[in-house]
Length: 367
Image (cartoon, rainbow, N blue to C red; front, top):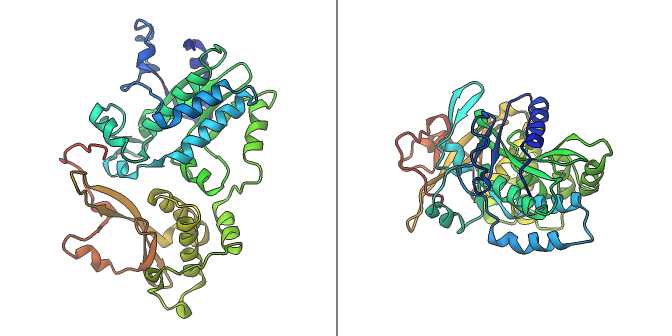
């Protein structure tokens, strides 16, 4: 696939108009064409070479050679596979620095400009950030369409929000694909739980070619997380609340809201095997819908590294319901009563959200 920069600039213009934000086109450094675009401030080469992970190679080869799949289904199949394979690494959020109301800063070494040690460490788990999954997706799409110059693929960089996602344009349509859109429950979580894909934006598609494929992909899937979890609870055949740790409260005095949230956590853990970050996002959204965002606040949980692994921080939720505080410990998939005096305990696992500072720490090694 040759890089048609004019087509990508047209794509970027459509993206900036649709998203109401200017983006930067990011190209694979191994495709560098004699510094042809150095004078264009809206085009840059990535800090890290794009690669297809080993665990995707077989699928990419099969999809590329398939004569039964149309191009739209090929795109959606790769998008789905990446969403179901990887989880979002929310330890990254503990390093983000707010510059002003609309811009943020993140060290390049957290996924944007990495070395071999980082890549080796990442192979030991499936946690990834937007820089990494966007490269996987972009390079996979380039490989699928390597013999079709009508398809042009790039990464789009929202620099102020320190965010990467993928853009694709051809004669029939222009789209963006974002596995971890930070404005919603990420598709990295949504697709694992049977929800519709929401991270794909169709910029133009006169014949509805991609729209029809996406509609078919989303067919029979719920769009709303709370309605999906209500369905799951109603149709559940598991023994909810069987975990002894989840029996800390007397069910006779639990409110309907607590019972609902407890059951939702159990479903997400047992039926979908959702990771801690996905659990945080999903429960946060249903709490906001059911109780309102004023009923919850974020806290950090510290995960001490062992055997040479670095310390990580993940987000948990403290709820205030019926004048009682509860914590949703997403690491353990557990809802329990919470007393803020726990913050004061020596070597406490939990840290108030505003009190965590990564300033002065050694760079994270990706473990």
